[in-house]
Amino acid sequence: MLDLTGVDPTFLDVVDRVTTELMAKSERLKSGEVLLVGAHCRDILQSAFGFEFPLRVTSDIDLGLAVANWAAYDELVTKLRPAGNTGIRFQVGQTIADLMPFGSVEDPPGTVAPTTRRAPISVWGFTEVFAAALELRLPNAGTIRMPTAAGYAALKLAAWLDRSAYGEYKDASDIATVVYWYSRSPAVATRLYETVQGQELLVEEDLDDSATAARLLGVDIADLIGAERLSEIVERWPASPRGLLIHHMNVTNAADWPDSPERRQVLLRAVERGLRLGPEAAAW
Image (tube, rainbow, N blue to C red):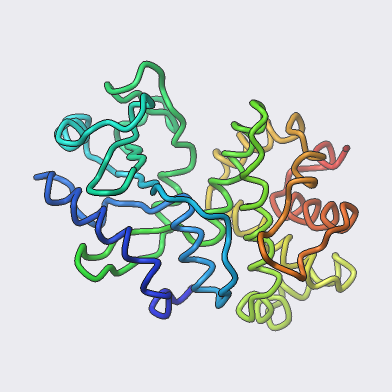
């Protein structure tokens, strides 16, 4: 399990302030019901993996709230000033926060319809990612939850499928960043070289350790989200613009990330094999 105790404390400041403010305004929200997602989650994972180079900057924060019912969500957000017109974005102290309810309020699974919005929104995979989440201890707000690297990647795959259809491609760099973490992680290298599963995958990937690490990421995503969610990815994946995904798979400020589209394609196809997407998904 990834050790979060050595994370740069500056990455925790905004998360701590926002979570503390939310709990102060709510009589029902507990810290353990808060799931950190988005760029702040990415930056904390980056620090936990031991990398110090900066990634794409954002000023807002994304939080999933595992609320028991709509009354609990409404009781909180009615005390906050809306920011914009999305229906889930609010001013929390000095920070803009997207507050996404999930869990028992999903209907159907992966979809919620807050009264503050005109249309439902996707929280695909939040429940599964939350169940496997890491514990993140904050200085004042207590312990919240945040995705594992595979959980974060799962959410980003879903975001790519949703947003690339509308010409938004920023999730590709986040997917690439998780592939980069796996390819440089000593813990992942141990799994590759010192376990039967890892050694078998290395042989199947012609001893290409970076590609094997990418494939292991796919395996971990599939195991985390489970068969039902995976089937939804399998159904949607062949129609996704994978050529654009490769083009936009940049890791900000990582000098050793490959520029070659051919090499990026090798890594993406390894992720696909790990996800068990099947031969039809490999037809580009």
